[in-house]
Length: 326
Image 1: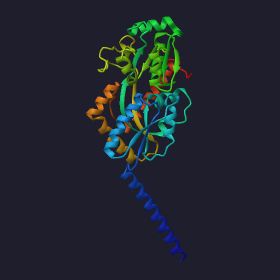
Image 2 (image 1 turned 135 degrees about the horizontal axis):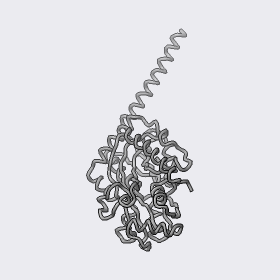
Image 3 (image 1 turned 90 degrees about the vertical axis):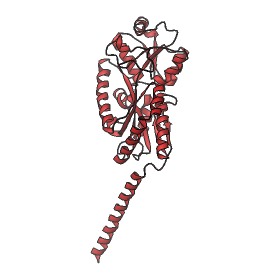
Image 4 (image 1 turned 45 degrees about the vertical axis):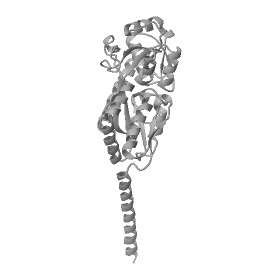
């Protein structure tokens, strides 16, 4: 009698377990069946936000579910990244990460997440050089002239970034290290705010993402000096690269999609498949080009390997240039 009871209880437990497994499989197979939040760890109107809106719209169209950007700026991108790391790993919260919060911030400041432990990579979506721009009042038109001006004026030159450890910050600090110049670092909560102060004349130079600076350059409110890629960008063919004058001066920013660690592999795979398809669309490539970024894609493994390599490279740069958090 007792054994029958045990057997029955065991069967019930087995049935419950099987039911839970089937439910989990069903949840994965019909993903997504509700709205997806895409955390952007920088303010609206910046490159990360615009990329999120373009990609999110395409995912919404493909799946019939809203994919909405959720701007959570602060701490050079670390605040929003921390929020993403602590959300449920169910595929309904994603992160638009870039080099700063993913690769460099943890090397410079204390953050409440571990990039390689707390995130599942989905795909790279974009990459681009920085655009070096100055206020029109600054008497320079070329990169050699900027070097000479920065060396001659020292602490009178203010440069801005969206936080310690951001690509804009590291690019400027590498410039200082390689040229023996001194400039004062002023931080903001996002590159659009930084560009606003550059236009106003509070700053003299910014090593900016393309998107926030381009419209101001076209309006004649800022002067482009150089880009930081390996070659001239087709978007600004008349603007030379900095490494033509300063060999080795090269930094390229990137943007990628991540999910919290332990997100089911089936969901990560489905996200990757759709993102890769999206990044191959001609209209997406054209929209990205207007931002000064190149639409790209990778496998999750390729993005993870790139992040590991970049963390090692930036660690060497930070040590050799003696870059410290302020």
